[in-house]
Structure formats: structure tokens, C-alpha cells
Image (cartoon, one colour):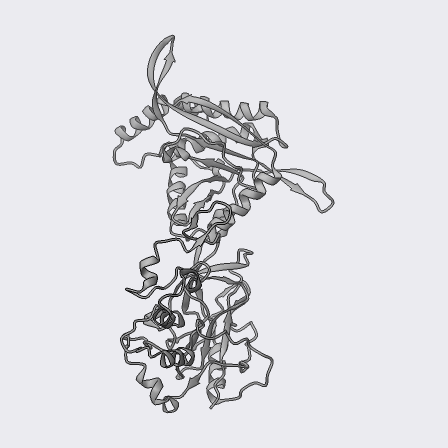
Length: 486
């Protein structure tokens, strides 16, 4: 009997992005899933999110592998009515079947499935969702070339004999017809082979690695994925040697890394910033001894209390400086006709650069001008944690009006940073280190740091930029008196 498949397309994740990287599958081929069950983790340029399924039933095809970049609107997973048994369903071994406008397959299983879909919770991401009462249900249509879905009695002896390496609770090593034929033609024993796919699924590349041990490294590798090399093969012995020579340098190419995810978004934003913004940079050395001593005194006077970090104090000074020099807390907008406007804001959303395993992220503290140094410290710690966990929301990553960059944590003194478009300025703070400094006409050892301000010369001139930078420097050098006035 023919069964109706549902193909779930990767949705718009609510960030206006066109692609996402598949991080991890949360289900396997053959699993029974329910409506709104998380099926995969995907990473966009801004965060890592779990994608829920709008369908219930048996997973038949996973359209992609971890590390692969998927386009929005392309197949993510295929689901058959509950109770189906799946053989040979793998997106690696067969092209995904595109749903076609063909007659609806009216089966009891399909009808029951549609009734279950109608009872969805209504949880949605932009571009898809379960109806939950108000939406209109989707009709199940038969794909033109569905993967093999069969009842248990229809399974061949060859199919069943290849299911001998099972993982508890999983379907086990399901082999597609293409892989089985390839193995038979080349005399490959699949019984002891552990596949590289999910739950040990044997993929086409696993068999190719055994039957083509001398194939060059580059012919086995796919874009963005390392080549699979058979243990002990001649290819393994040469895998440390570059397989391709670069024509310009004459050197071997050791690897190619696709620019994607956060790195792709950062590259695009930085390129746009350099192309559109006529930037200039000013800097100043600051004696931060008094600020360091102030914080040490607060920590000593109340060891049980949470003492704000130095960055929180600097953020407080920066916010006060932006009130005095609002030109640096703006944005330039260009109309379709080419005219430009400087947009000023009634408040400050201070972004700060946070280095994560996924790359540089810039979460922003909303309404910074309404927060104390202690409240700022709490927000900095919270946003840093969610950014590093990949859980920051688009609003937390895209709402800043000015950026503070503490590159001193990397042990460097200064940097002419690139402005975080569409903002118009960024302030960098270098490392605090002991330096000789003249105090009251005498040489002394002081805690010195360097502040660097890069600004958009379209919104202000050097006098405004220098005035803001000097204000923040004075706050750091005389923090007690300045904090009393803020």
C-alpha cells in the first residue's frame, strides 16, 4: 500500500536569514515523532535554535548532515504516517523527493495523520507552524519519487539481514539500495562496518572509502566536510600531505574552510562598514589607577556583595558621555532617492563585543542610560553567557546604538576597530598595565590603559569625538567624584 509522506521545509527562523547550518539531529530515521517535538538544532548567524516538527509520524529521510549549510525553504525532514517501517531512507544516498501537485493519497493512515496534524499546538517559527485551531491544515500529497516505505511483511530478506548492527532504541544500520548494490558489486562485507551516519547508519562514502582506497583525497572530500579515509589505506598514509598545489604560491593547500554562520555574517557586516563609512580614529592613554583602587575598595568593604567589574564602570561612563555627545549615538539612513538623514535616539542601547566559540558576538544592553553600574554588570554577565551558549535573541544581538569593545582581555594595548554597522562609533579599551607616569611632577608607577575611538566622520568632526573620548578618560581617572554626579 502506498503511504503519504510529508516533507518539512527548513523555515525562516525569524531573523530574515536565508540559510542555517545543521548542528545536530535530535531524531533518527525510523523514530516516531510527535507534533512540535524538536527534531534538529540549527545555527544561524545569530544563535543556535531547536526546530520543532509540525508533523507527527515516522521519520523517513533526514535531508542533511551535521555541519551542512541548508537553505531556507529546502527539505529538512520527511515524515510518514505513524507505524510505517523505513528501509534505505537517507538523504546522502538519494536526492530528496520534492512534493508534487499530484492527487491526494486517500488512505486510512493518511486521514488519521491529518487529523493529528490539525490538533497541533500552534507553536510556530516564521514561515511555518502547526495550525493550533486558527491555521489551515496542510493536505498530505504523495511525492513523485518517495523513499521506500513498507509494512514489516513487505521487507525483503536482504533488507532484514542488513539490520544486524542495531543501536538500542534506534533503527540501526539501514542501508540504501544504492549502497547495497555497490557493496555487492565490490565484495564489501557490511556486517562489521560501522557507518559514519547518525546511529551508525552506513553511508555511500563509507563503502567508497573501502572500495577506492587509492582515490586522491580531494575526490572523496565534499565541500565543508573532511574526507573519510579507510583505516590503514594508502590514502590514510598520505592524508597529512597536501593533495592540491596552489597555482599562485606553489604551496600545497592543506584545507578549505567555508565562510558561513557567524563568520559569514561578521565578514559581510565588516565589509559593508568599511565600504560605506568614512571612519577616523582618535586615542588617548588613561591613568586608571583610581578606578582600579575604587573597585578594590568596594570589594574589600563588602566581600559578600557582587562588585561590578571594571567594564561595567566604563560602560557607565560611556553612557554618560553619549548623553553629552549625542552625535555618536546615532545612525545614518539613506532613502531610495539617495538622500541621507542622521537618526538620533532617545536613549542608549550599549553593545559590547563578546568572544565566543562561534565567533565574535555583540549583544546589547537595552536602555543602558537607566541602569546603575551594578545593574550593568549583571546584564553584561547575563548577555555574555547567553551569547556563548548560542541562545541570544535577534533583539539582543541587533539593537545596539553604540559598541564598547574590551580587547584588553586578549593582552593587547590598542586597536583601530571597525565600526559595527549601522552604528557610527565604537570605543575600544586596551589592557591595564603598570607604566611609568608623571604624578604631581614626580615619576610613579600607575595602572595605565589606552582608549581608542573610531567614529563616522559624517556625523561629527574630530572636536566632538575628542570631547567624548576625553570625557570618558576623565571619568576613569576621577571615578569617585564623577559617579557622584551621574
